Image 1 (tube, rainbow, N blue to C red):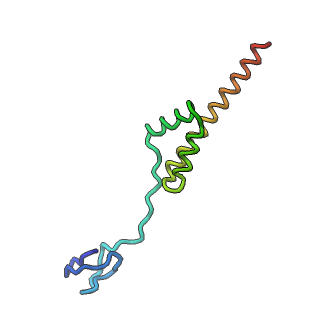
Image 2: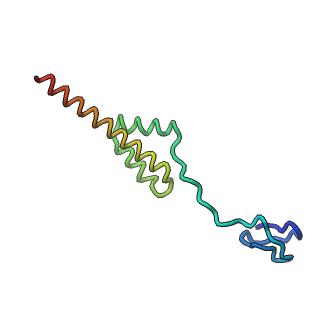
Image 3: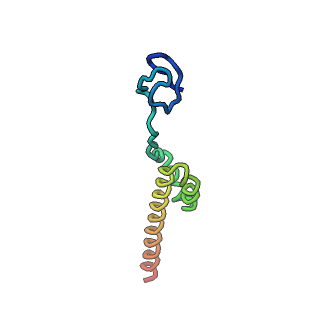
Length: 105
């Protein structure tokens, strides 16, 4: 409910003018604009990245699937962190293979 500043009559929140006296209601809300997708906090990013790196990138996939519809910002951050962890694992794998090849030579 929104109340008229002139006569004090209650009006619907969507009413552009007072139903009783016809005064324009300045506080009539416009269509709500959705808030930007909030991402993960810094400490949450750190724990998700370490979980992906130490345990499995499946953790990031699960978090992405849980958040993809309700919290898009967090889902995008979880996906990005998972890809970073996969990239680091790929680099470590290449280093270990090269070390094994060099050790055999």
